[in-house]
Length: 224
Image (cartoon, rainbow, N blue to C red; front, side, top):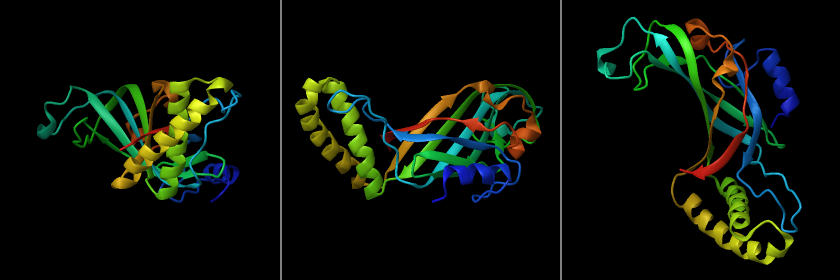
């Protein structure tokens, strides 16, 4: 797995490994699990990160626009609403830092009809979603962190709660592992960031993913 510094350098040079083209936007930040904020002795602790790996990341830019023509199949969609949808490979390093180079996207109505022409009015929301494959290692590290968070919420964060937390963590982790490994599952992080993060964008910038780079902290907190 490449280091985060190498990834940033590659992005600056326009090199991508996941189908993105030179000049397309990148998404970067920290990938962590939902975890306890304290150790059993009450001292602060940092959230654990997933093991180094590649994961799926999608980004959806939502907004309002002037759309001259809408596919009749999507005539019931809210007037003027669009979604610009992108995907890329989330390269998570050993320290939890990640970088994703986005490929050129598609602009569609909320129900998925292609929009061939539009004049962008305003971006209203930006939603990022990342998915880890529920491997045994990912399930184990996720469930350990999730159990710590649940036990802290149930027992408290003081040193006197250590015995309660240990017992609660053991039970919660076992239950989580059963759920995580019983079927084909994904461990998911999803977040919404400020609509102004992309700067000024028009239709061509949205199609080519040549808007401003995005930073986001992705917290994996649910199994689907």
